[in-house]
Image 1: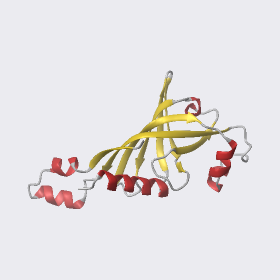
Image 2: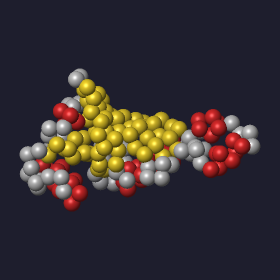
Image 3: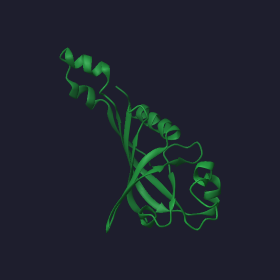
Image 4: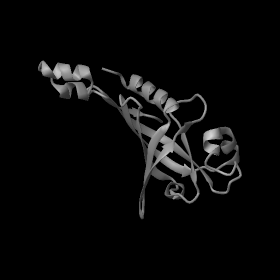
Length: 160
């Protein structure tokens, strides 16, 4: 049974290597959910997460909105819902710090007026370790209660 700290460590390691999440907000006139590249600046875990997007996007229009990011590891062995507040933090100094060739592919340079930099300040995460493994299947064939395996593999982690 993993501890909350172990699951959080796995989450941050996964976000640093995989970086793709579904970022979503609920707006007054609807919702917005998009696959986005999460950027973790520096070596500190627990955020914030940074996202580049278009000034015209629904996500960029969400000011101080309650947001969540959904993460699935490449091997589908870890899942997470990360909650926080999303704000437009377009700042040239931060754009310079986070700029990389993958971001550059989407824009006409750092001075592109369409660049919006979003900051997600994190509140909490609910993290699941996949309990649907081969071992879990074998254990259930011999009478093990799968609910016990599943309940031990999810933790809520405060990220403030």
